[in-house]
Image (cartoon, rainbow over all chains, first blue to last red; front, side):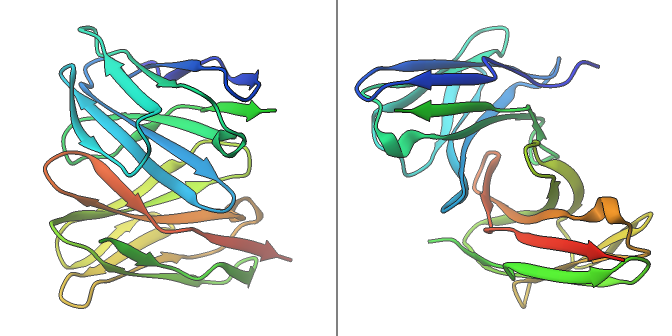
Length: 111
Length: 110
């Protein structure tokens, strides 16, 4: 089985811009979760999508949004980028209450 | 709210045994995961505990006590490649939301 894939792997943006990140889950996995990882805050949950519906949401501002398509692929969007949004964004796919498989991540740098 | 605590750093010797502790205070507990993360890489799954007791998988074992809000990860016969960050995470609620601890950076020395 192919693993979780994320594109792009690296991204450089400037403050005020917006960005869209993509995640393709493992075949058959309908749950896709997004996490932000920074040295200071560690891994923090952004949101989870299941069958095209947002099922859980973390404590991030509304600038962070996401969606899931009928083939379970997911995208997350960050609008009006701030310097503090620089982080590794990880996507994970899973079945319910089971091991989450993480993708390699997208390294976002905001200048 | 959710609170998960684990030591920031630990150092151990190759061939030895090390125990990494994790304490948590959460609501709606549905299980506890341990992940390993090498620098610059994605987390990889090590273990999942939902019932009290010990789960053993090769050199790695994980223990859970739900009444005490406590778990540990035991690594035996340490190897240099075990140098990594070890993340404790609790799953809560009706979905797959994981709340992570800040991770324990383990350094294995000769």
